[in-house]
Figure 1 (cartoon, rainbow, N blue to C red):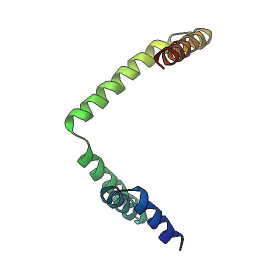
Figure 2: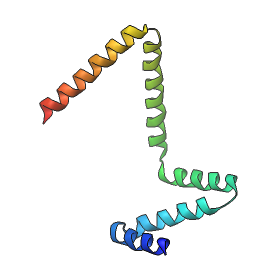
Figure 3: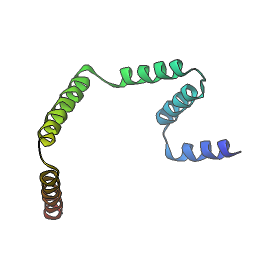
Length: 98
């Protein structure tokens, strides 16, 4: 009963393509074999990601790691001060942009 109600509500809010994707994910999740679920998810990722998007993600992760290494050298007090300054700048940008 609950599944029928869920499916009815999903039909109201999701288009056919999104419902089909959800059904694929449910089918993969219903499998008791962990490796099969992992393989299904990997196929979905491979279909969705282009080589360009993979490269952008790789570069973004490398940049994040480099920035994190810079912060590792700071003392805890300096890290807190830097964090507070960053938050203040972000909040000032948001207040000025609206």
